[in-house]
Image (cartoon, rainbow, N blue to C red):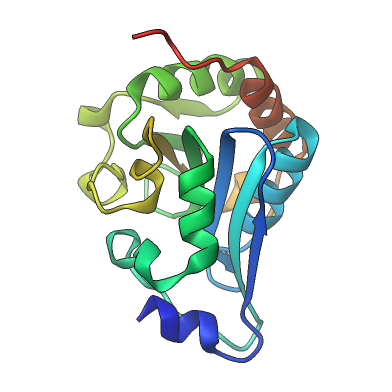
Length: 192
């Protein structure tokens, strides 16, 4: 299915390999709007690597994360082989969580690190790291989720619409982008 999406006219696959810290947005463009913009801007600011799939306005094809296989894309494969850790950006909406950023994924040390940059930059929002406090569909811990396929695993960040600048009470994405870039620049893989 992922190969079919990538072959669809108008779909753009973005791959830029720089540092071993990577940002991802494979539901970008019209599907989970602004996730690709945030990922690319944060990666550019941090000289980090980036992988994004940008769907055109007339397409909204959702493929669950655990079904996006690197065997379907040489670009995704090269990205995952290059980075040590990955941060994937997603959009979500759920009643009662409109002002909550969820940090799932397999690398809990990286999740704590990201939270330490995001919470001060976005003090009016809740940054939730405890997996038990994150609704199951947003935990992003499945081993075939691409964010967990980097050698050091990764973090799946779920962003509500307002944080992505998409609601009447929207926020600027600049503090989010700046915090993500600063966290990427400050990250060093823990010894172990």
